Amino acid sequence: MHGFIAVYLRELLILKYRFKRQLAGMAVTPLLYLLTFGYAMGDIIRMDGSSYLEFLIPGLVAMSSMTQAFAIATDINVARFYWKIFEEFQAAPISNLAYVAGETLAGITRALMAIAVILLLSLLFGVSLNYGFCFWLAVLLNAAVFAALAVALAMLVKSHADQSLLTSFIITPMAFLGGTFFPLDNLPGWVQTVLSLLPLTHASHAIRAAALGQPHNWTDYWLLAALAVLFFIFALRCVGHARD
Image: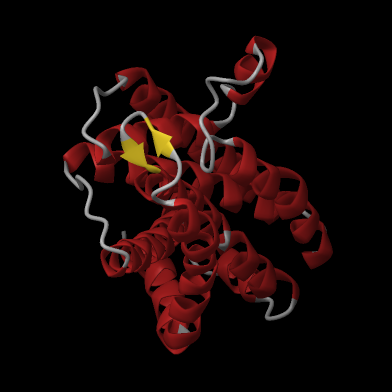
Protein backbone atom coordinates (compact mmCIF):
# COMPACT_ATOMS: atom_id res chain seq x y z
CA MET A 1 0.00 0.00 0.00
CA HIS A 2 2.82 2.43 0.83
CA GLY A 3 4.45 1.73 -2.51
CA PHE A 4 1.20 2.38 -4.36
CA ILE A 5 0.74 5.71 -2.57
CA ALA A 6 4.34 6.72 -3.29
CA VAL A 7 3.99 6.04 -7.03
CA TYR A 8 0.66 7.83 -7.24
CA LEU A 9 1.81 10.85 -5.21
CA ARG A 10 4.87 11.20 -7.43
CA GLU A 11 2.63 11.48 -10.49
CA LEU A 12 0.37 13.95 -8.67
CA LEU A 13 3.36 16.14 -7.81
CA ILE A 14 4.40 16.19 -11.47
CA LEU A 15 0.82 17.00 -12.44
CA LYS A 16 0.72 19.79 -9.88
CA TYR A 17 3.91 21.28 -11.31
CA ARG A 18 2.41 21.26 -14.83
CA PHE A 19 -1.16 21.97 -13.75
CA LYS A 20 -1.83 25.15 -15.76
CA ARG A 21 -0.18 23.82 -18.89
CA GLN A 22 -2.03 20.53 -18.56
CA LEU A 23 -5.39 22.27 -18.22
CA ALA A 24 -4.66 24.45 -21.22
CA GLY A 25 -3.69 21.42 -23.28
CA MET A 26 -6.79 19.53 -22.18
CA ALA A 27 -9.03 22.44 -23.19
CA VAL A 28 -7.62 23.33 -26.63
CA THR A 29 -8.59 20.23 -28.63
CA PRO A 30 -12.16 19.87 -27.24
CA LEU A 31 -12.72 23.60 -27.71
CA LEU A 32 -11.67 23.39 -31.35
CA TYR A 33 -14.00 20.43 -31.96
CA LEU A 34 -16.87 22.19 -30.21
CA LEU A 35 -16.36 25.33 -32.27
CA THR A 36 -15.71 23.77 -35.68
CA PHE A 37 -18.06 20.78 -35.57
CA GLY A 38 -20.47 21.15 -32.70
CA TYR A 39 -21.26 24.85 -32.61
CA ALA A 40 -21.18 25.39 -36.37
CA MET A 41 -23.44 22.39 -37.09
CA GLY A 42 -25.21 22.10 -33.76
CA ASP A 43 -28.62 23.22 -35.03
CA ILE A 44 -28.28 21.92 -38.60
CA ILE A 45 -27.72 18.21 -37.97
CA ARG A 46 -29.98 16.17 -35.71
CA MET A 47 -29.05 12.79 -34.25
CA ASP A 48 -32.02 10.78 -32.91
CA GLY A 49 -33.77 13.93 -31.76
CA SER A 50 -30.65 15.51 -30.29
CA SER A 51 -28.53 18.28 -31.73
CA TYR A 52 -25.12 17.39 -33.09
CA LEU A 53 -23.55 19.32 -30.22
CA GLU A 54 -25.35 17.06 -27.73
CA PHE A 55 -24.21 14.04 -29.74
CA LEU A 56 -20.63 15.31 -29.95
CA ILE A 57 -19.96 16.08 -26.28
CA PRO A 58 -20.24 12.46 -25.03
CA GLY A 59 -17.96 11.44 -27.91
CA LEU A 60 -15.41 14.02 -26.83
CA VAL A 61 -15.68 12.71 -23.27
CA ALA A 62 -14.94 9.18 -24.48
CA MET A 63 -12.07 10.31 -26.70
CA SER A 64 -10.46 12.58 -24.10
CA SER A 65 -10.73 10.00 -21.32
CA MET A 66 -8.91 7.61 -23.65
CA THR A 67 -6.17 9.96 -24.83
CA GLN A 68 -5.46 11.51 -21.44
CA ALA A 69 -5.39 8.16 -19.65
CA PHE A 70 -3.07 6.73 -22.30
CA ALA A 71 -0.84 9.82 -22.07
CA ILE A 72 0.52 8.47 -18.78
CA ALA A 73 2.70 6.25 -20.98
CA THR A 74 4.61 9.31 -22.14
CA ASP A 75 5.44 10.30 -18.56
CA ILE A 76 6.51 6.74 -17.79
CA ASN A 77 8.80 6.68 -20.80
CA VAL A 78 10.36 10.02 -19.92
CA ALA A 79 11.00 8.65 -16.44
CA ARG A 80 12.47 5.44 -17.89
CA PHE A 81 14.65 6.75 -20.69
CA TYR A 82 15.71 10.22 -19.49
CA TRP A 83 15.37 10.50 -15.72
CA LYS A 84 16.09 6.81 -15.02
CA ILE A 85 13.36 6.82 -12.38
CA PHE A 86 12.28 3.28 -13.23
CA GLU A 87 15.67 2.03 -12.11
CA GLU A 88 14.97 3.55 -8.70
CA PHE A 89 11.62 1.75 -8.61
CA GLN A 90 13.48 -1.46 -9.40
CA ALA A 91 15.78 -0.91 -6.44
CA ALA A 92 13.01 0.20 -4.07
CA PRO A 93 10.84 -2.28 -2.12
CA ILE A 94 7.83 -1.57 -4.35
CA SER A 95 5.88 -4.49 -5.78
CA ASN A 96 4.80 -4.69 -9.39
CA LEU A 97 1.19 -4.52 -8.24
CA ALA A 98 1.80 -1.28 -6.34
CA TYR A 99 3.64 0.26 -9.30
CA VAL A 100 0.99 -0.65 -11.89
CA ALA A 101 -1.86 0.40 -9.61
CA GLY A 102 -0.23 3.77 -8.89
CA GLU A 103 0.49 4.56 -12.54
CA THR A 104 -2.97 3.37 -13.65
CA LEU A 105 -4.68 5.53 -11.05
CA ALA A 106 -2.55 8.48 -12.18
CA GLY A 107 -3.78 7.94 -15.74
CA ILE A 108 -7.39 7.78 -14.53
CA THR A 109 -6.87 11.02 -12.59
CA ARG A 110 -5.62 12.78 -15.73
CA ALA A 111 -8.65 11.50 -17.62
CA LEU A 112 -11.07 12.82 -14.98
CA MET A 113 -9.42 16.23 -15.14
CA ALA A 114 -9.91 16.29 -18.91
CA ILE A 115 -13.57 15.32 -18.53
CA ALA A 116 -14.12 18.12 -16.02
CA VAL A 117 -12.70 20.59 -18.55
CA ILE A 118 -15.02 19.29 -21.30
CA LEU A 119 -18.10 19.47 -19.09
CA LEU A 120 -17.28 23.05 -18.12
CA LEU A 121 -16.85 23.93 -21.80
CA SER A 122 -20.17 22.29 -22.61
CA LEU A 123 -21.89 24.54 -20.08
CA LEU A 124 -20.40 27.56 -21.84
CA PHE A 125 -22.00 26.28 -25.05
CA GLY A 126 -25.34 25.93 -23.27
CA VAL A 127 -25.44 22.12 -23.21
CA SER A 128 -26.34 20.24 -20.05
CA LEU A 129 -26.70 16.46 -20.26
CA ASN A 130 -27.32 13.66 -17.76
CA TYR A 131 -24.17 13.04 -15.73
CA GLY A 132 -25.38 10.31 -13.42
CA PHE A 133 -23.83 7.16 -12.02
CA CYS A 134 -23.77 5.22 -15.31
CA PHE A 135 -22.07 8.12 -17.09
CA TRP A 136 -19.21 8.25 -14.59
CA LEU A 137 -18.98 4.46 -14.41
CA ALA A 138 -18.45 4.30 -18.19
CA VAL A 139 -15.87 7.10 -18.00
CA LEU A 140 -13.94 5.38 -15.20
CA LEU A 141 -13.96 2.02 -16.97
CA ASN A 142 -12.78 3.59 -20.22
CA ALA A 143 -10.00 5.47 -18.43
CA ALA A 144 -8.96 2.31 -16.57
CA VAL A 145 -8.75 0.35 -19.83
CA PHE A 146 -6.40 2.79 -21.53
CA ALA A 147 -4.38 3.70 -18.44
CA ALA A 148 -3.58 0.03 -17.82
CA LEU A 149 -2.82 -0.45 -21.52
CA ALA A 150 -0.53 2.58 -21.39
CA VAL A 151 1.48 1.13 -18.50
CA ALA A 152 1.86 -2.17 -20.33
CA LEU A 153 2.95 -0.68 -23.64
CA ALA A 154 5.28 1.78 -21.91
CA MET A 155 7.20 -1.22 -20.60
CA LEU A 156 7.45 -2.82 -24.05
CA VAL A 157 8.73 0.09 -26.14
CA LYS A 158 12.47 0.49 -26.57
CA SER A 159 12.56 4.26 -27.06
CA HIS A 160 10.47 7.39 -26.69
CA ALA A 161 10.00 7.49 -30.47
CA ASP A 162 8.39 4.06 -30.39
CA GLN A 163 5.78 5.43 -27.99
CA SER A 164 4.83 8.11 -30.50
CA LEU A 165 4.32 5.41 -33.14
CA LEU A 166 1.96 3.52 -30.85
CA THR A 167 -0.08 6.67 -30.34
CA SER A 168 -0.17 7.37 -34.08
CA PHE A 169 -1.17 3.85 -35.12
CA ILE A 170 -3.45 2.84 -32.22
CA ILE A 171 -4.89 5.79 -30.31
CA THR A 172 -5.37 8.35 -33.09
CA PRO A 173 -7.27 6.02 -35.49
CA MET A 174 -9.41 4.78 -32.63
CA ALA A 175 -10.26 8.35 -31.65
CA PHE A 176 -11.83 8.97 -35.06
CA LEU A 177 -13.33 5.51 -35.72
CA GLY A 178 -14.74 4.70 -32.30
CA GLY A 179 -18.12 6.37 -32.76
CA THR A 180 -17.00 9.67 -31.27
CA PHE A 181 -17.88 12.02 -34.14
CA PHE A 182 -20.46 10.09 -36.16
CA PRO A 183 -22.88 7.18 -35.62
CA LEU A 184 -21.73 3.81 -36.90
CA ASP A 185 -25.19 2.57 -37.89
CA ASN A 186 -24.93 3.68 -41.53
CA LEU A 187 -21.59 1.99 -42.14
CA PRO A 188 -21.39 -1.39 -43.93
CA GLY A 189 -21.98 -4.37 -41.69
CA TRP A 190 -18.43 -5.69 -41.88
CA VAL A 191 -17.07 -2.26 -40.91
CA GLN A 192 -19.39 -2.13 -37.91
CA THR A 193 -18.19 -5.60 -36.91
CA VAL A 194 -14.54 -4.50 -37.07
CA LEU A 195 -15.19 -1.27 -35.15
CA SER A 196 -17.14 -3.17 -32.50
CA LEU A 197 -13.82 -4.75 -31.52
CA LEU A 198 -12.49 -1.35 -30.42
CA PRO A 199 -12.84 -0.56 -26.70
CA LEU A 200 -13.60 3.08 -27.51
CA THR A 201 -16.65 2.07 -29.55
CA HIS A 202 -18.24 0.52 -26.47
CA ALA A 203 -17.13 3.42 -24.28
CA SER A 204 -18.63 5.98 -26.69
CA HIS A 205 -21.89 4.04 -26.82
CA ALA A 206 -22.14 3.67 -23.05
CA ILE A 207 -21.19 7.28 -22.28
CA ARG A 208 -23.53 8.69 -24.93
CA ALA A 209 -26.46 6.54 -23.84
CA ALA A 210 -26.01 7.63 -20.23
CA ALA A 211 -25.55 11.31 -21.12
CA LEU A 212 -28.61 11.42 -23.40
CA GLY A 213 -30.83 9.40 -21.07
CA GLN A 214 -31.10 6.44 -23.45
CA PRO A 215 -31.41 2.75 -22.43
CA HIS A 216 -28.15 1.23 -21.24
CA ASN A 217 -26.48 -1.72 -22.89
CA TRP A 218 -24.77 -3.38 -19.96
CA THR A 219 -22.66 -5.47 -22.33
CA ASP A 220 -20.62 -2.34 -23.00
CA TYR A 221 -19.85 -1.98 -19.29
CA TRP A 222 -18.94 -5.64 -18.81
CA LEU A 223 -16.66 -5.62 -21.83
CA LEU A 224 -14.86 -2.50 -20.61
CA ALA A 225 -14.50 -3.98 -17.12
CA ALA A 226 -13.11 -7.23 -18.53
CA LEU A 227 -10.63 -5.36 -20.73
CA ALA A 228 -9.52 -3.21 -17.79
CA VAL A 229 -8.74 -6.36 -15.77
CA LEU A 230 -6.97 -8.06 -18.70
CA PHE A 231 -4.84 -5.00 -19.49
CA PHE A 232 -3.99 -4.58 -15.80
CA ILE A 233 -2.76 -8.19 -15.64
CA PHE A 234 -0.89 -7.63 -18.91
CA ALA A 235 0.74 -4.54 -17.38
CA LEU A 236 1.83 -6.56 -14.35
CA ARG A 237 3.54 -9.10 -16.62
CA CYS A 238 5.19 -6.36 -18.70
CA VAL A 239 6.55 -4.61 -15.61
CA GLY A 240 7.84 -7.94 -14.34
CA HIS A 241 9.71 -8.57 -17.60
CA ALA A 242 11.07 -4.98 -17.63
CA ARG A 243 12.49 -5.52 -14.14
CA ASP A 244 14.25 -8.75 -15.11
